[in-house]
Length: 190
Image (cartoon, rainbow, N blue to C red; front, side, top):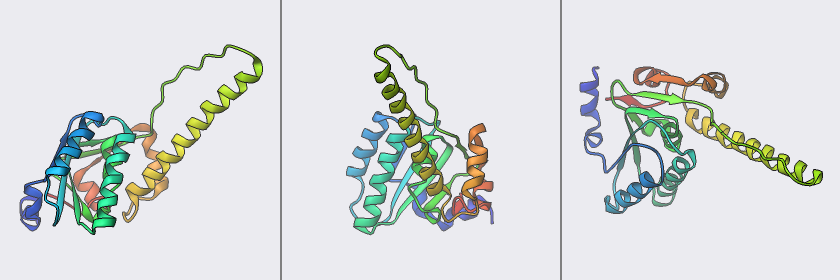
């Protein structure tokens, strides 16, 4: 069946309740909250996003709000990725079960490792310097743990193993919509 034919199977996807576009940041979060307040209180909710990425913690925050609505309000919430779902966009997508994820034809996902840029200034008594280094190491270790949780959520229920994501993420793994469907990362492409 063609993507056009598939689209008819999912009429709700033609009119998302929430439209997110641009960098995943506090501005997107504010728009998300405003649109969520304006959305119907009952029935299936459709959230569409197109993004080149941004702040993974904002993506996790929006995703957690989706999870809470799904669990406490028993709402069906559908994800629709359009054109580009990169980086933090894939982090947001991970909050949706694979059978609630859709992509428009030609959309690309991009999955990569978190990036940190940091300068450590070592100045002061030697005993305090080890604490400074330990604190930075703990920050890195916990960031890696959060990243791995997100990768596991992203591939849960799909045909993609966590280990494959770990292997491909360091070099920016791009996945075209049809491949995402074939690998079970999304339910369908429209």
